[in-house]
Amino acid sequence: MANERTFLAWNRTALGLVTAGLAITQLLPTLAIPGGRRLIGLPLIALGVVTSHRSFSEWVANERALRMKAELPPSRLPLLVSSVITLVAAVALVLAAIGSR
Image 1 (tube, rainbow, N blue to C red):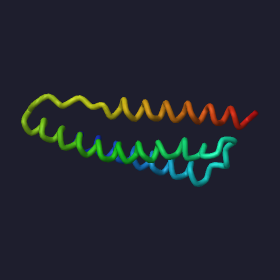
Image 2 (cartoon, rainbow, N blue to C red):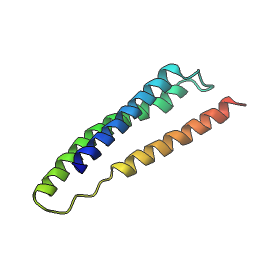
Image 3 (cartoon, rainbow, N blue to C red):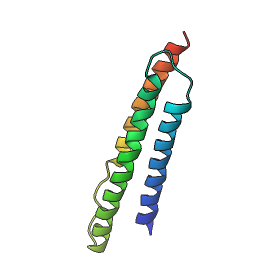
Image 4 (cartoon, rainbow, N blue to C red):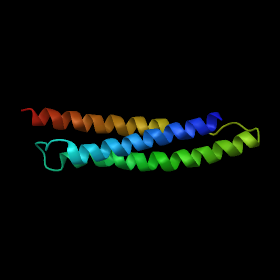
């Protein structure tokens, strides 16, 4: 059951990333740099797509390992998600600082 809950949690995260990316690209006021909203929003949407796909792949690998009573394979998904969010947040910080001048 824990594997399924983890899978569902990653998919909620993916859905949140896609939703945030769409909201940023469509609803955020125009920034000082043309394309700034897309520069922030599109990576989040892409990360949501990758997160959803990887969560399924990891669920399958974990199910296989559990059934064979083997060690669970390591996951790089947390590193990927946190790295992209950190990068996007840094870009947003720079764009917000430029826009406030």
